[in-house]
Image (tube, rainbow over all chains, first blue to last red):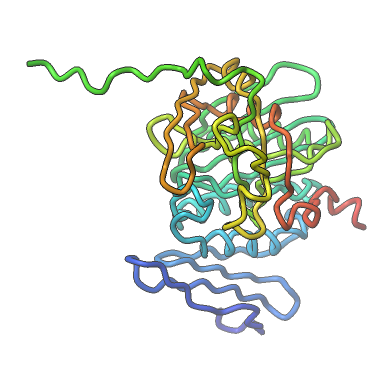
Length: 166
Length: 149
């Protein structure tokens, strides 16, 4: 952060039973150009650019909200959302979306994962990050068969689908 | 002696196909989404993901007290919504219905079966929203940046 004119937008401590103190921070430069987002043992730094949608900072807020969820957040025994899943979800989103991609719903899953959902007139796309480096994807275009698959390394098909809804 | 494990669970044939099962939907977490194609709010597929042992907790309304309401179902859970799905729709997705009363909920049961994403989505689409969670109207992330400009 050295050199940047940073504005602290939110800075608060998060406590979860049994996991000690987590720290969640969002920092933005004066022109909104640099955002740093840290969860527990890692951090994500990226530069906003014309290649990123303007809703990205709002997604950070959504993900921070998920990081705050404790045990049983659904009243049925759901697990807290794993910070490594939040980080993976965020990094995957940044590498996949286009400037014209609509904002996804950010949805917690009971197993401690994160799910992004798009429900457009042309297609439905759901991406669940249930564990780092493992994306479970469901694609259903308005015309054509649905596809369900697990993606570990090859993201090209997913990029193509996101291009179709963008 | 061979341990054959617990006996296989059986579908409760006493629960008719047109009986409703209810599930609570927490507020402020996007468990209710806007389906642009169907032009309606519906539950997210995440609302129908198993937690463990292929089980999803539900309220079997046919075993609930007479005149039990969705509002009463979430009385101790402020802001929650309620989704309902017909037992027959769940069975059509390979699920079985297993009653399992708990102290605070005599009508508690489980929808048991594998639920890959396609099944979660089918259940979500078959479900009706009886009570919207507190935030359901607010988030409609449909504008693209291009449209916003």
